[in-house]
Length: 244
Image 1 (cartoon, rainbow, N blue to C red):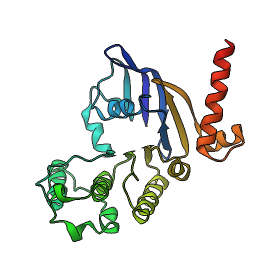
Image 2 (image 1 turned 30 degrees about the vertical axis):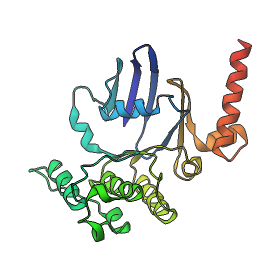
Image 3 (image 1 turned 180 degrees about the horizontal axis):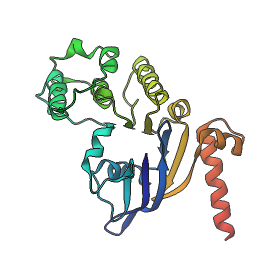
Image 4 (image 1 turned 135 degrees about the vertical axis):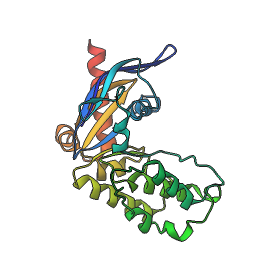
């Protein structure tokens, strides 16, 4: 579904991604985690076309993303912080996005389940600039799912949401994943990832440290909590490096 082939990216002298080789498949729910500045955001932005790698190729459904921008229609993206025109009403935002995605040859299949679950239509006439951070998160979530994408990229999806809204969103993520969609999540809330992720990709200093199923990591370490799993594996790696 998605293949990162020898991806490298530097900003000045800082090497942000170094020889990243990994592939994601339909039906996986991949958590990308790592310390701040590890390269997580740059990897996602490279997939979205917001950052151009210095070297390597990214393929979506075997098509090179540098040569075919149409792949972006397969992706639903929820940013960590949604920046919207403050004077635009919620209704206008959804109408604008629908117009942008309009296809004269095919009818647009939309998914308004999150719009209904978050009761956004009740506040459709509110200006985006007047919304709280949590409500903006709900709008971003609804937009990510709206066009029934095959790939979902969710950056800190539950940040700023109240407990009920968190559970509504997590249930929606699980539901879409069970349909065979590829879900890619970044979050500092590891308990959420324990609930949602089937695979864990750990990046540090721009390099992949491991990419394994959550179940295999639990068996390998004997731990059930993701934070303890990460700590054990990285401590082991540090010891191995010190012995070289």
